[in-house]
Image (cartoon, rainbow, N blue to C red):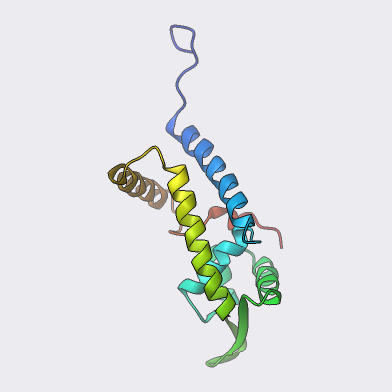
Length: 158
């Protein structure tokens, strides 16, 4: 309590958590319209960014258990969005690639992500958005977070 008896203002970490939870829930709702979950979306983004990566490399990049990643790849493969190909340099590994349908879906994911960003940051002008991104990236780097990887992957059940 403050000297006036009012509770202290919310701290920056609380506001980040409050907004982050809100943004994550809203994104899950938006991406559900594409019949995707946030983990599937993140995996598709990772595959698009590094086509031909092995499942092991993708699991490491995302910081998720390999067994959970295999299940995610299985689901996306069953939908015709990704395909596994034998790795030409190591036949024990599979290289994961987007299919044509997966590549087309990435355009929809990008559109939904831009709409989501615009909705969540509607109160800010372009300069404020850039400053916020820079400041958040600085804090995330200081906390040891991997750029572009949601830390929730660490907690996915196999």
